[in-house]
Amino acid sequence: MDKQKDTTVRVAAELAPRLVKLAQLHGLSQKELLAEMVGYFERSQADPRAGGKGESLSDQLGKLDKRVDRVIGFIREQEKAILKPLRDEVRVLSHRVATRQDVMFIVAEGLKPEVLQPDFVTAYRAQQAADS
Image (cartoon, rainbow, N blue to C red; front, side):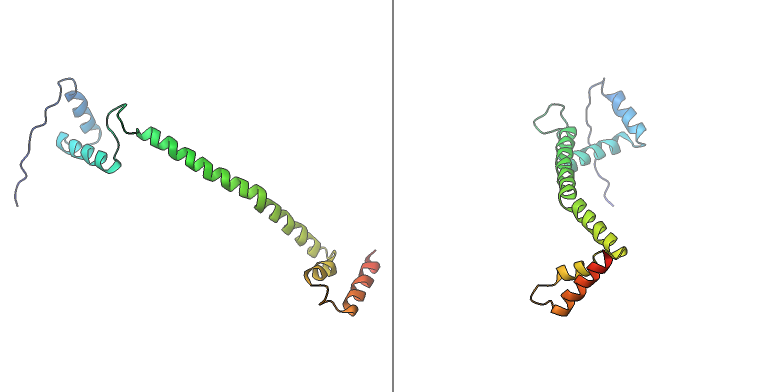
């Protein structure tokens, strides 16, 4: 197995204690910490400079939050415009069927007028009159 050849990276004297502290915080050697930092910036494609050309992660998260808010707003609008009225209709129909109110009417409304037989209409009207 070939041993990898290391190279030296120079850091400013005031930065060295911060690097040591970060490495200890994450349980890594300084060499491992540097490798993880480089990998992180490659994967995330984030700009490590504060105020660099690229967007910071917080800016990217802010944009993502706005997109999520738009999706949630769309879902809420669909709920208000479609789902709640549909739920209310189902409740009304369910109540009518459960209390046997207008069962004949519900059935009759579902059929086209040309399909209804005269005996059916007569029976329906008689039932309506009896219930009144």
